[in-house]
Length: 178
Picture 1 (cartoon, one colour):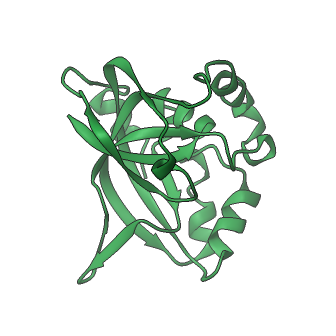
Picture 2 (cartoon, helix red, strand yellow; picture 1 turned 120 degrees about the horizontal axis):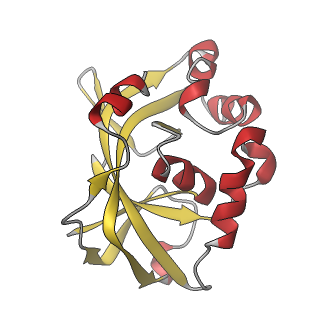
């Protein structure tokens, strides 16, 4: 059972679920212990959101993922969990060129990467992630305490993760990560 969820654009969740993205770029939700960066939670459910998502933020070749996310959107007030994620590596990216060099590992446009990179203090965290499909989708009511612009959500009840299978083989994952 897993009760920690990570809010992310629904189109990005679709890209992760399809094995077309292996890096999540994030500004927050990462802690530093010594010289090592770690996510607040190394394993989590993907919580697809539609609030800040916008079509022009996704590269044109991934527009179909945006459309699929809209088409499969659960009813209002419902969250559908279909995938879990394990973080395999975290790195702090302090150079914009290095952030842009991760282009082939995610679906955001360079403009979105630049905007996120420069928000408040320059820099991003790049989380290399392994994605697993849950044995079956699980729906939960969306509760008021889950609302807002936050990365991590602690669910009121866990979601079963037994039987989850990787969306990429070991070899595909190794070839598709920085």
